[in-house]
Length: 98
Image 1: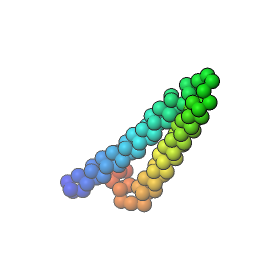
Image 2 (image 1 turned 180 degrees about the vertical axis):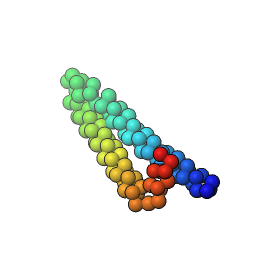
Image 3 (image 1 turned 120 degrees about the vertical axis):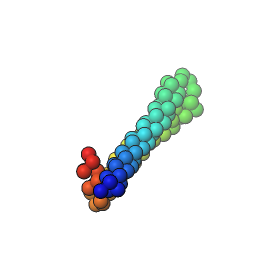
Image 4 (image 1 turned 120 degrees about the horizontal axis):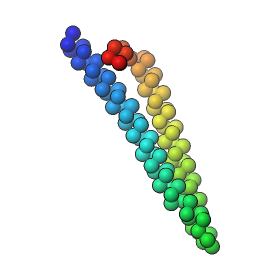
């Protein structure tokens, strides 16, 4: 019985590490998008420099894309994890220890 409990604890900890890794990845995407926004907004407001306006627009577009990709990946991976838990024995160990 002790071996089963140890396996359940390991499965639970692995699940928690995976959830936290997914959240960290989303935060990294958000941080990168904010960097693009921070670089793009002043560039768009730069007076009398059309080339810098274009670079600012590209930077803002890259920030929006980065944010969108990060959110999409976060929710896609989250749905995949939920489906995996529902279809595997991991759900039994998570429910027992949670």
